[in-house]
Length: 349
Image 1 (cartoon, rainbow, N blue to C red):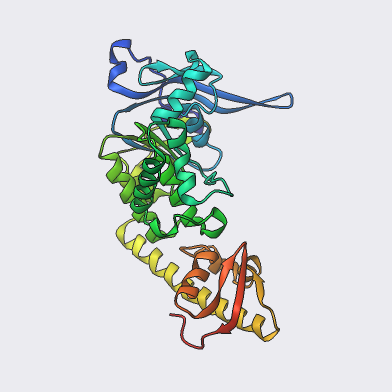
Image 2: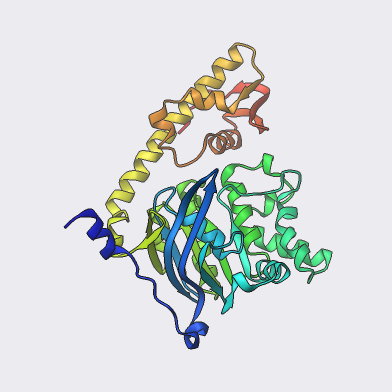
């Protein structure tokens, strides 16, 4: 059998959904195509996607970068328009909505978690979460703050409420973004790489939180390349070359318990090595009279094979060392500021 024949068997064939069945589905994508123009060249991002998602489902879109996952999320969320086909949300054809109707739909029914957070840099965590509440206009000033605090508590960041994004680690920023996506009590939540910048422990906590929230009735759609996410979703759709394909064994994408255990042990071992190298690098910097060390310089001092396998980013590890008082100082604007200028001589384990 040729590769082309295999692909034809794997593709989900477009299927028109009878109008009487619209109420059964929260999201309906019918033969959806999306093509972008780069100069005079037409670049297809989606090639006939046909997907139906029921209310209350937690669906993950699996696939490599460039397969069309994020494009499909943007179309479902009304952030972009289809080139061909149609998308219905709650029975409404999104292409037929006016700009105001589409804005109302996004504001009242859809929550977003973007891949790169999209937090406003001059606003605190709690202020970022209150943005959707401000546009919704249903709560008082006090009510908005209380709702935002409740959401921060859900994602474990209540004590970081008044910190700006530059004062938060990547994982913390992601949690703020997730909290913000839930602010308007959406019926549909779209997540682009929801665990992309989280360490393994925090990632599991967030996925459990999302699963619990999904069980309360919201429909979740997550685009991800992390096979671990699929363990918390009710259905997996694998995407390839702008199409949704079937016939791929999901179990082949998941880790076994033994594989997961081995991966986590390897990550923790590399984290210990990274901590040791960070402490030595900072100690060397202090010996040279340096009081401010760029985090990028610290990253470059760690071998790539260790850096790529860490369960956290370097900034998060630095903050752990600071909390444990193995280093005296603070992380500020991509710098390690060694205000008290010392490293504690003890094991980093």
